[in-house]
Amino acid sequence: MIDKHSRKISYLRVSVTDLCNLRCVYCMPPGGSELSERDEILSFEEILRIIKHGVTLGVNKIRLTGGEPLVRRGITTLIKQITDIDGINDIALTTNGVNLKEYAGTLKKSGLSRLNISLDTLRPDRFADITRGGNVQDVFDGVEEVLKVGFTGTKMNAVIMRGQNDDEILDFVRYILERNIELRFIELMASGWKNMVDADRFMPSSEIKERVQEIGELVPVNERVGGGPATIYRMKGALGTIGFISAVSKPFCSTCNRLRLTSDGKLRSCLLSGGEVDVRGLLRSSHLDEEELANELTKAFKKVTTMKPIVHSGKNKAVMNQIGG
Ligand code: SAM
Ligand code: SF4
Picture 1: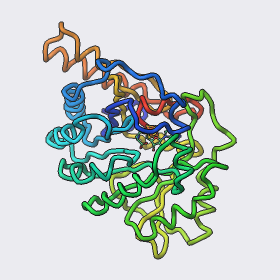
Picture 2 (picture 1 turned 90 degrees about the vertical axis):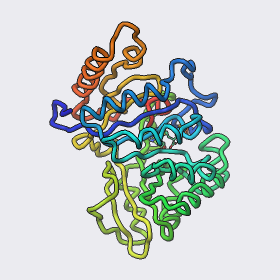
Picture 3 (picture 1 turned 120 degrees about the horizontal axis):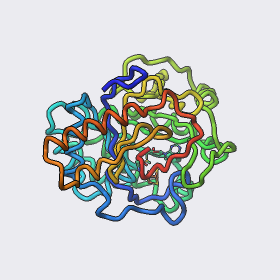
Picture 4 (picture 1 turned 180 degrees about the vertical axis):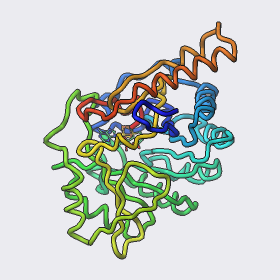
């Protein structure tokens, strides 16, 4: 699939659930967001059907996200089934890390290629505030387990918010000095549930980078595991690397190769803008035979590919737990 701006689509991000065991302030309202009915969420068979169809159209890389993917029952079985699909050569997962201590070993055995762990603060009280009740020790334990069971290319994503955790930028850098992790600082995006762009707390990558350089020089890295939107640097003496994702200040849309599948079965062209096409309805339609379904799925993939904006506005709001950030 090549979109109208000559971008080759090969990457599908799949949100497997809209449920989560945390309630991060920028992602969910205090009482949790409105959840889909259980039967509105795609079954594993349906997810696999869509991925397999995507493969026939050039998809070769999958990322599982959510909500929190590790709260979906049987997730490691799904991962194993995806790794068994011919044509998929990379499957990664984005998690808040809370259940990783328990899951890291099974995830490794299931064939998962890599993990992204989201962590916005290293301080217990702050973690409880930002996530509305989480225990940061669970994430620390999870990270150590991930390294212990032999995952490589692990990334840690930290959303930096002025006045909330920007005083920890250097602590994050110190955290990866002795851990082989790619630390990525992420710009705060407009929050769907708050219905607003949080300009006061937004901090551009350029400013975050200046702070990082207070403790060491950054040398650009060219080669990296798994590709992606971050600009990566190495710091002398650090085992890990440091990346910056400037989705707001410098959108990387021109190299975007991804589509998204929401947990309730919509193919989506972009996290922030563009449009979506319902594929759950097609999968559940009783009057389509296998060949007709395949044709309709091809049409849906192609249609959503043509909807990809050349560049997102940066001001649109994403309901992250539903779309999968
Ligand atoms: N629950 C998993 C997690 O937290 O990693 C996966 C889903 S979560 C929606 C995916 C990513 O979106 C997380 O790294 C989170 O920090 C990010 N995210 C959510 N809302 C955001 C916002 N308003 N701005 C920037 N990143 C956001
Ligand atoms: Fe849950 Fe991830 Fe959203 Fe935090 S960012 S509330 S962990 S889905």
